[in-house]
Amino acid sequence: MTSIDLSGLERELHAIPLKSKGPGGVVGVVKDGQVIMRQAWGFADLKNRRPMTTETLLPICSISKQFTCAALLDLAGSLEELDARLADVLPALEGRRPSVAELCHNQSGLRDYWALTVLHGADAEGVFRREDASELFRRMRSTHFEPGSRYSYSNGNFRILSDLIEDLAGAPLTEVYRSRIFDPAGMPTAALIPDTSKTETVGYEGNDAVGFFPATNRIHWTGDAGILASLDDMLAWESFIDRTRDEPNGLYRRLSAPQTFSDGNPAPYGFGLSHGKVGEIATTGHGGALRGFRCHRLHAASERLSVVVMFNHEADAHGRAVRLMKTALGQAAAPVTGQEAGPDWAGRYLDPETGLLVTVAKSHRGISLRFAGASDALTLSDDGIARSDAVELSRDGDVVRMQRPRENLDISATRLSGDAKGDIAGRFVSAELDAALEIVGTGSAFYGACDGFLGKGEMMPLYPVAEDIWTMSCRRSMDAPAPGDWTVQVRRDASGAVSGFTLGCWLARKIEYVRTA
Image (tube, rainbow, N blue to C red):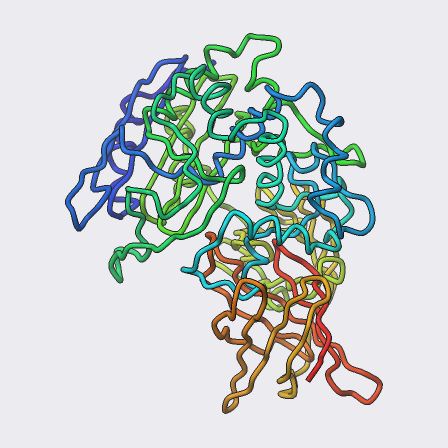
C-alpha cells in the first residue's frame, strides 16, 4: 500500500479553484476510511451570494447509477428472474431483448434516450416528464448492436432499472435508496430529487473567457441520475466502502466485481461503475454531468483511497479527480514521447459497422482522434501504431483500423473523398422513431430540424464532409454533454435522387430515414 503525499495533495487541492475556474466547487479525499482533506470554495448561487459549503446539495448526476445498481442487488434475489419484465417496457423491440444484467453493464445495445430526445424534437430547455421516458422505450424497435456484444453508454438502461426496483420493492425509489443505501452508509442529506428544476444550487454554463450564466434544466430523470448529495454525504459513502471492504457479500464488493462481454472478453464497466487505472493502480468510479454541473469520484481499493470532485460549472471534474489521486500516490506526470504523424494520417474516414465518422488530425502529441463523445489524444509509436489508454489506431493506406477494448469494438474505416451534392433538402421520416427530420437549404447552407412527440426542434446546421456524407451539429440538448455531430449517410435511388439517409451518433447509431417529400 502506497503512503500518501500529504503536502503535495494539499497543494494540488488548494490550487483547484485557480486551475478549474468557475463559480464554485467541493473536493474531498478519504484514506483508510477517514476523511483526510476536504475543501469548499466559491458560491452555490452567485446572484444571491449563497456560499458553497461541504453541506451544499449538488446533483451527482450519473454517479447515481451505482446507487441504482446497489439498490437492485440488495433487493433482488436473482437478476435473471427479472428479465421477463422487460417485455412490457420494450414491447416493440425486435430480436433478442437485453437482460437486466446487460442493462446494468451498459451492454444492452439500446440507443441512449437523451440522444433520442433530440430526434423527437425536444427543446434543450424544455420540460421532459416522467411519462416521456416510457414513451421513448415503447417506440424502440431495434438495438444498435447485439445485446452483450459491445459497450455503449445508455442512460435509458438505468431509467428502466429504476422502474423495476419500484415494482419489486412496492415503494418509491427514493425510499429504497434511503433504507438500503443512504442510511446504512451514513448519508443523511442525500436524496432522490428527479426534477432538475428543483435543484437549489445553481449550475452555470459558460467559462471564464465569456462569463458564467445559469443553466436551465427542466428534465425528470431517475435511476440514471437524480440524486442530490453533499460532499459530506459522498465522503461518507467512500468511508462506508472502506468499512465494508472485507465483507464477503459487501455491497461495493458486489458492485465492483469484474464483468465480461458475451464473447468472454473483459468488460471494464459493470453495475454503474467504470473500471480503470491511475498509473498501475486499479480504480473504480464514475463521472456525472448535467448542464451547469460536473462531478467525479474515484476509488482505489488496494490503496484504500478515494477522491470526490464536484463543480457547479462545466470544468473537467474527471481530470481533476485523476490528478488528485496521482498526486496522493506520488505519481509523477509521465513524459510524452512519440513520432510526429505524417500528413497521410489526417482525414475523415467512415466505419460501416457503426455508421460513424472517424476523424484523424495531427496534434502536438501525435494524433487527435474523434469518434466517440470527446476527442482522444494518441501517441504515435515507432511501430506505426497510435495509442492512448483507451484506443489503438493503425493505418494501411486509406484504411484505418481502430481498436477500442473498453467497448469491445474493432473496426476498419475507409477514407472519404469527393464533394457532397446540394440536393439533400426535403422531409424524411424514421419508422424506428416515428419521427421526422426536415432539411432545408438557405443560400448555400443547409439546416435540419427534428419533429416528434416531444415537439418541433430548433434548426441545426449541416456541414458537407464528402460525397453523400454530412454532419449535423448538435451542441445543446436536454442532457449533457450533447450528442455533438450526427453522421448523415445519404442514400440514392436508381435514378440518383436522394431517397433517404442513415443518421447516427456515438450514443444512438444507424437510424434509418426515408424521404417523403
